[in-house]
Length: 192
Image 1 (cartoon, helix red, strand yellow):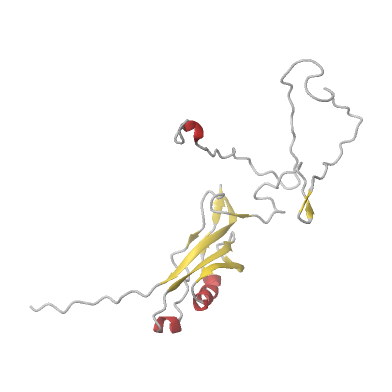
Image 2: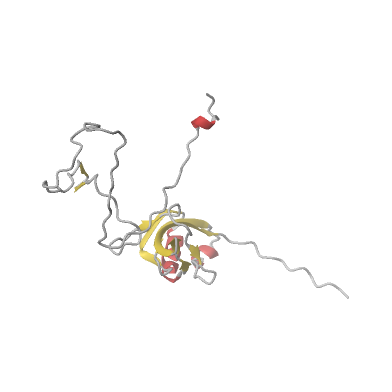
């Protein structure tokens, strides 16, 4: 088969939407028999109601915490979660408001004609504010540009990300470019 063959392509199919369960809610799992008769599959074919249900076994240790392979992470929107989603996980991503603050060009760098950029990562909460404590600088060309981004971030405003109709926190990775534009020269007035 050639590399361009349909059989060699990877397709990503999103899982079906699952409505969020209420806090403290439970889910029921129903098993069905695919083959008739006793003894199909491993183990007994009947459930003993007199035996208590035990808690799931802990699997191997991952880092300093035990990993429980039998439990699933809580659904988005539950009150006991503090989830942060990426741009790939939200239905509508964070958008910076038109009247939002922006980093000011540091005057000392402007006078020296120094240009540069900052690549920053931060979280925008459900109210549309950037969480300044989550700011992480991934790359920067000058500390002055980093300070300009740090100073402006608390005053920046966004439209919060959404999953369905629910507002969620989103991790944002944004480049800030500091460039000096050449001045526009106005033409001489036209004679009449």
